[in-house]
Length: 188
Image (cartoon, rainbow, N blue to C red):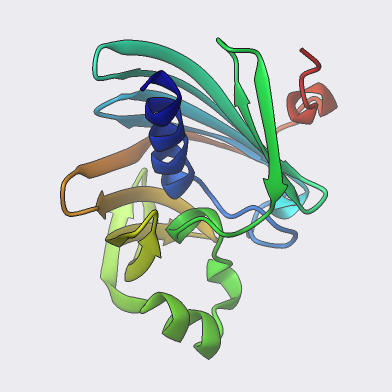
């Protein structure tokens, strides 16, 4: 049960993240702090999104968890700190804001993800474009709304039918120096 819970939390967290491949952001580096019903996520990125590390501290169904997702070199590493495990997988394949290059949306990506522009809204003083989308994930159809500024998802709401999850940026530091060690894969 605990491993299934961790997998679900990582899936939900990945939905909330920012894009992960090169040239996905309009700013070189940053630190984005997000809050959700489950806790707090800090996302560090550099090289216009070529490097990304999400550090999550959550309370999910009474379980305190500390997890990370690191994206670099075309791969995604899911790190379970408590169990000292690292799972490597190809980059991409996760729904929504985490894998879509919102700076360069193609018709094919829009069609595959049923992406539609749904207006503008200001978050943290940044004018965001609001997008809706749908995807199949873990045998469920999930709908998501994301608010994007400069390629970065500052807010997201996900509806999986049996659950709903949302997060919103509470702080964004732009063009800051991020230590290379932030993106190192732990050796347990």
